[in-house]
Image 1 (cartoon, rainbow, N blue to C red):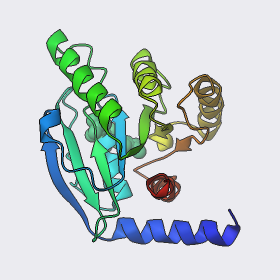
Image 2: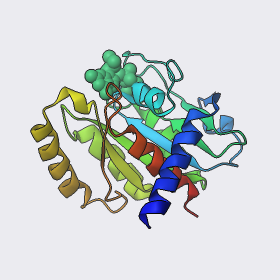
Image 3: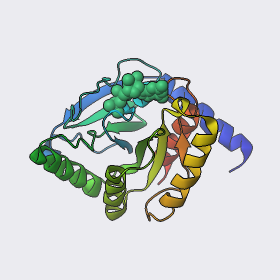
Length: 215
Ligand code: GDP
């Protein structure tokens, strides 16, 4: 793509996310999913990875996604409509990796997420959020494998980039790239973001719009 086309897309993404964003619904089971009439981008990550903060930063508002550190707080898929008329939908998937959660809760999470990932034709991309201070953990690899198996393309997003030194962040970026390359559905573009400083947020907005426009 030319530089001008890139800039146009970035501007379109900026405008889109600055416009109307509304919470549509929570789906505690597949029978509650909304009609599939807009491209969807799903957010996955361990509890406390900074998912609510990232959703708020992307959409430039506070309190769109509830910020809470309670592990396993959401056992449902939350849908947000972006644009009026709707251009795309952001899907906040339940947090995972709550070691202290009861086994049946973890099992329920796997069923819900797996069914959604495998059955949703409008799902264009997933974002796998990884805390920059910790890097990829086994639970992250687990969801990466679920996405590989469901053939859902995903970007890894390193969150809370402001919490680590630039050199450490650079090193983490490199090792994450190497590991992602071994996963068939991992997209080669990896993002580093900070919801605190706003770094990487505009780039991620553009990537989300690009994925949504992908036929
Ligand atoms: P969630 O459980 O994944 O939704 O995570 P939250 O968005 O609730 O964030 C968990 C904690 O990390 C909160 O205390 C946030 O303020 C903090 N946090 C989230 N993103 C960032 C970030 O980019 N930078 C910093 N410094 N803290 C963050």
